[in-house]
Length: 59
Length: 172
Image (cartoon, rainbow over all chains, first blue to last red; front, side, top):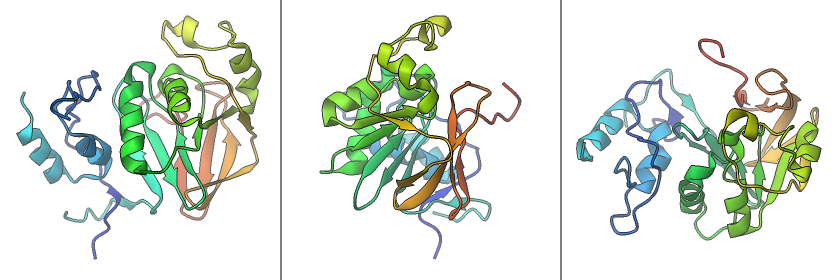
């Protein structure tokens, strides 16, 4: 069974723009657009998952 | 999720928060007895730090914040987290006096032109002592260099080092 809590090698950059504030209406970060869960799990996402997050963001 | 053969499995009870500049990364440990955050990010991101911790803890409270060293990117969330949860704040032994006097000459914030909301240290990290975090044993090791008072945390059982800012890929 694949590990569920792993730290992949560095690859896909973080979308963070240093605003780091959850907008109460959208429940997404006002800077990068990620949800809190996406931010919390970023360190354990695979590169494919990170690219999938990027695809959902307005940029 | 495809398994990366070089990826390291993190033990349950250890949650890594990968943050971005100006905040340091943080590690949240949760076990049956206690929830502890190691390093609390920069003051400007304190709301995000609180949200990440609350999201991970659910109904539980944060019991303790530990700082590996007192650069502004590592302890900027302390005041906010303490105001929300009344958590204990634990800093390196060598930094306790400077924190509790909030001495601007001994703390780094004025010299670096960075901000930090004041807080009080309730207890000290003593080099050579052991902590229980996430149900695991962690040794507190003095690591002067990047910061003269810094400590790092070593878990022998899982071979994990929380290296604070002691190790850099390309030097300082």
